Amino acid sequence: MKTTDVPQDDANMLQGKLKEPLYSLDEDGNFTTILSVGWDPKNEVMQEAWDNVNMKIEQAKQDVVSGKLSPIAYYIEKNIMDVGLVASYMGIWKFRVKRHLKPKYFNKMSKDILEKYAKVFDITVEQLVNIEQ
Image 1: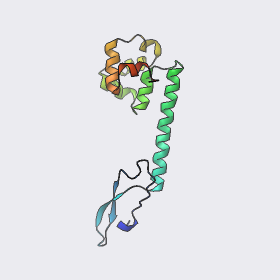
Image 2 (image 1 turned 60 degrees about the vertical axis):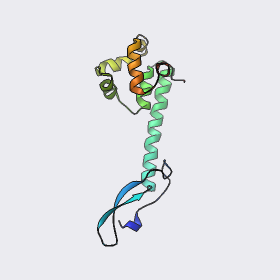
Image 3 (image 1 turned 180 degrees about the vertical axis):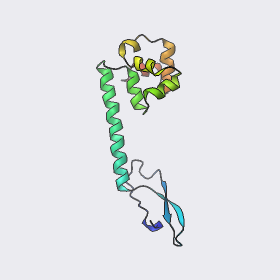
Image 4 (image 1 turned 45 degrees about the vertical axis):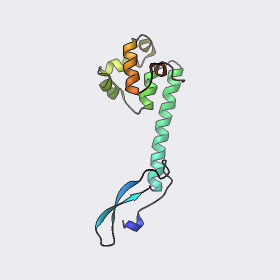
């Protein structure tokens, strides 16, 4: 694609605040990079991906409010993490994080463990135990 043909469809989610370097051909036929604010097909795919992430976050929140899961599940989704990553940050086995996803085990956790989770999610313990805030 020639430098003059690089798409500049400024409909991306960051409203032109972030530009992406793309390779293009200059007037002499040499490869160069040019900044682009985006192009419609990519913007649509990115929006669909973020809609999917937001749907998972909302579902996790509903599961927490209904008592099916502990607040840890909500913060895992909200931070786009998984059990393995959280276990790694916590320095514990994955099976323990999976256990903590169950409200009956979450409610029995010590203050120290709650503080570690809060630190991993960069929130307060109060925000961890009460996702409505």
